[in-house]
Every structure is written in C-alpha cells, then in structure tokens.
Image (cartoon, rainbow over all chains, first blue to last red):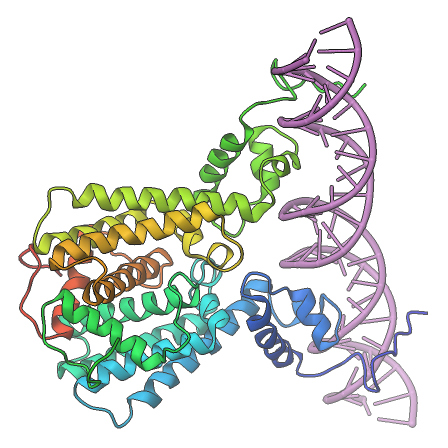
Length: 213
Length: 213
DNA sequence: CGCTAAACTTAGCAGTGTAAAGATTGGTCC
DNA sequence: GGACCAATCTTTACACTGCTAAGTTTAGCG
C-alpha cells in the first residue's frame, strides 16, 4: 500500500524541484496567461504532487514573485544589450524599442510583472530589487542620453516620462487595447509613437528613421 | 417546506437584480481588487443565491465586462469635463490630468478595465464601444490641441503617444511600481512627468505651471 | 382563474490555494 | 555497516471559486 512507484526510477526525492517548478511555470505562463497559472497544474506538469511546491515556496504568490523577478532581470539585460554601442538620440529610441520588444515577446510574463498580483501584495525582496535595477538601468541610459547625472531632477523626471511611455505603449498593445497591425514592425511602431510626441510638443523629428507611420 | 422568507417582505423575485449586482460588484471591487472579485460574494452581498447572477449575466466575464464598460464611460466623461473651457497647451495637460485622476480615484476599476480578464478574452460589444469612445474623446481633444483633423496621421500618432504616456503613468502609480509621494498632488505629478518629456525632447516648458517638481 | 415563462433556489461538479499529518530516503555520525 | 535525522515529497482534507442541471416560486397575461 501507498506504493506509488509509477514515476520512473528515482522517485520521491526528485531534487532541485524549485527551479523545475519555476521553469515549468514559465512555460505554462505564456499559454494560460498570468491569472490562470495554477500551482496544481504546474506541479502536475513537473510530475509531482500538488502540494510539493509548498516545501520550496511559501505560497503561490512567492512563485509568481520569483517569476516576476526573473522577468525584471531579463528586461534589464535587454535594455543593456540594445543600448550598447548606441549614442545620441538613438539611445532613447533603442531603450524604448528594447522595452517594447521584451514586452511583445513575453506578454504574459510582462503582464505578471506589472499586474496587481505582484505589484500590490507581498513581493520577494529579490523581485523588488530586480525591478529597481531594471528601472535603474533605464535611468542610467536616460542620464547618458541627456548627458546629466543620473540622480539629477531632470534625469529622474525624464526617466519617469520615458518609462511611462514605454510601459503604456507596451501594455496597450499587449492587451490588444490598440491592435498591432500585421504588417508592422516593433521598430516602426515605437518610432511612430515617439514621433507622436514630436507632434505633441511641436518639435522637429529626432528619430533616426526617416518616415515612420 | 422550502419556505425561505428570511428576506424582508417581497422575496424571491427581487426585481432589477442586474443593476443591483453591478453596483454591489463595483463597491466590492475597490475593496478586494479586480482578481478576487467573486460572483458568489457579490450575490451574497445583494442577498441572493450564488447562482442567481447567471440569469442576468452569461458568466463572470460578462459582469466584469459591464463594469469595465461603465468605467470607460465615466473616463470619457471625466475627459470631457476637464477639457471644457480649456484651450491651447492647457488641453494636453488637462486631458492627462483627468485621465490620471480618474485612475487614481478608481484604481481597482482601472486595473480591471485594462487587465487581461477584460482586454483579452471576450468583451461585451458595449464595453468595446465604450472603450473606443473614450479613446475617441482623447483623439478629439488632441485634434483640437494640435488644430488638425482628428483622423489625420499626426493626430492619431500624437493621441497614441498621449494615451501611452497617461496609461503608463497611471498604471505605474496605481500598482505602486513608483510610489506616489505623500505631499504630492495629481497636478504636480502629471506636470512633472510632462516636464520629463520636455527634457527628453530638448524643448522649453509648455506647462502652464511655473515650476513642477 | 389558471397557465406560462421569468426569476430565483438547491444540489452538485470540477477546479483552486493551502494546512496538517504521514511516508520515504539521502546523508551523517557512531 | 547500521541507525537515526532532517529534508523531501505524498495523502487527505477544508474552504473557496465558477458554473451546470434541475427544481420551486410567482408575476403577469389570457
């Protein structure tokens, strides 16, 4: 009785379950969306009982939070990656583009990162740190772009504006509030939105692309 | 048997249950957040069985969607209200402000309106229409601000930019991604973010406020 | 007055997060 | 080498959720 050796060979003590749960969760995330990601389904996918996760995560929120932390780290890397080698007005465009493309490539993860489940409620210190560092990266880029100290008022305000814009644009597209045209590229779309600001503030084009639409 | 006259006087056929459920849901919404709003709890609050709602809404999603529709209508009204009587550069500021304040005053509703539950998944035609009209209102304002036809490319791009900025700013604040300082007003905060764009695009101030921070 | 259809209820299923308590086993110490 | 211990995983169970199916009540109309 209570023999359950269905699982191939070395059962019971599976080993490094936490990362396996995390990666399984990440895989399912983009399939089912951030709200319908269930611990039970993740556990089942890994091939482990539904309560096994509670020996590695305090609760569902902690797993979610760790997924978010991972997302923020990747976002920061994406920003760094796209920024390297760029200069002048290209820096703003590249940062916006990296941000936007990250969101478009990981829509459910992005929704999770900025959704109420994570943002409100208890965040893992690591998640909080990762989020702060991602924003710090953006500030660094904006600082270089404006050629001012990162902790100056101008850079802080400009970074907030840039973040708001990128986040808003990404959110609206990801949630299908504004539909992303089939024949559109991320580049042209971001350029188009940046161009929109030129119109709003009556300024000649700073975009490196000649004619966005 | 099966007498259940606990409910005061006219029981059973309660009458106009749908609006009562909606308003109860709206009340609970800001308490529990958009994800944890349950049909059962709403039904109980109204004093009706947990399945009664299914005779007025196809499912939970439809109730949520109608809440969102209501939100979009109120948002449009808030934009119109703040816009009336304003002119010139004040139009952009007022629109941004109205948008931001609406979100700050109805955080859970706003999260719901732009959350995956509503945006993805099936929306009520009315909700879709209400959302479109809210954006239309913004476009109208931007059109007047730029003094160009509403369906011109410039106005469309500028409206997208303005919406992205407002939505991003509101989302980030509402979700506590950036904390809203205690001694800060909506006005100064929005001005500060708009000022940020001035820095980003190297333009002298257009804000009607003298010194935002 | 009686019938019908709308409004509402009870019962119940499948799925969720999570707590409590038991089963298994890798590793360490004698 | 054997015994124990603590980490790891399982079973069981509870309270909650959305939702379906099948019943009961009653308003309104002929």
